[in-house]
Image 1 (cartoon, helix red, strand yellow):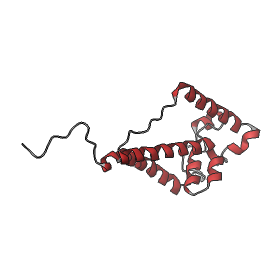
Image 2 (image 1 turned 135 degrees about the horizontal axis):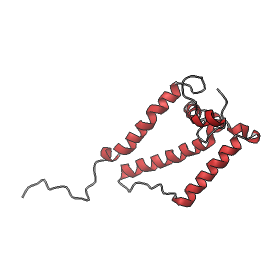
Image 3 (image 1 turned 120 degrees about the vertical axis):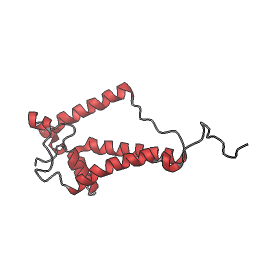
Image 4 (image 1 turned 90 degrees about the horizontal axis):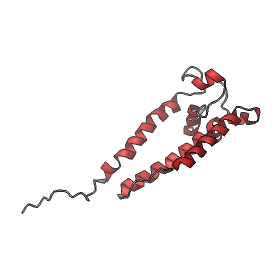
Length: 148
């Protein structure tokens, strides 16, 4: 009888292997975030203009996203909220999801699920639509990023 038995289906991979996915996701976010931190989106000429803004003159829900990331990286939460409040909320949700994913990988638990369902996706879409309209009205000018 051999001492080395074949691995069973229930054997868990080592911790570093389980952490591979979350660490790869962190690297995939860290590289562009570092670039945005170093190359200021508030200075003209570094990034292309939003095609929706160029075509309509309206801020889209993503407009100000690069400025928002730049502000967050530099510790300016109020500036980030001014540039794109829904993006700040999205980043917070994704950070919590990522931490839960890392915890699950480290402890060997099941990965967290992010299932919203159709109704919640529709609600998110409607909230983004309302945000887009309000930020383009004079009353919502505080929600629009500054023109560069």
